[in-house]
Image 1 (cartoon, rainbow, N blue to C red):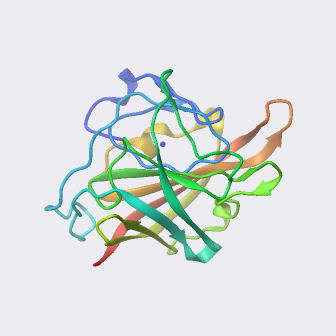
Image 2 (cartoon, one colour):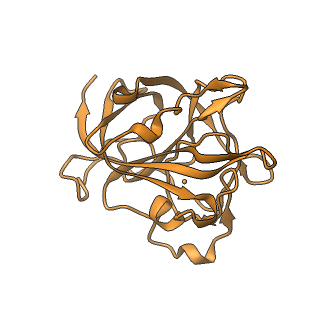
Image 3 (cartoon, rainbow, N blue to C red):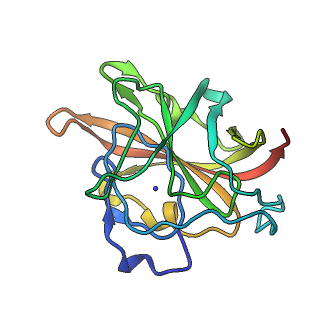
Length: 211
């Protein structure tokens, strides 16, 4: 769902069937998922602009996420890890609720930040039901407790088989503040009760709107 350390030494992660290596620091949005994580980093403080040219922000808990181009907007709850290492996800009975993985960097700080959301649940569309329709150049707005809004611009969108999940590309360290939105996609396998692919949105911090 990242880094200067070597990802191949880390345990596999799983996101509703996704397998891959996780490094340090991440942000992910996922639908109908189970994620096992190993190794994360805290947020970096403001100072360097990294490779984006936008000043990095100080750490602050995100409170909401909005993707105007697809009409997606949700408050953010914090989710962590279960005792078995599996990532907690938003409640499936409330599929319009997104969450922020609280061991990933704060949005706007150095590294890839991770937000989680379902594609659907109990026969209802989820917060990222239309994530696959996102296009390069679209904006993602993440409001934070400090009142500031981190504005990310989508760089690319991938739909990948879960068996070939690009963990290093998704989780690897970045030279600037980035965001990953991830949800399920592709064909639904009724026997496995799971989608066969993941939709991954990559975005970079391009603006900071003050409180």
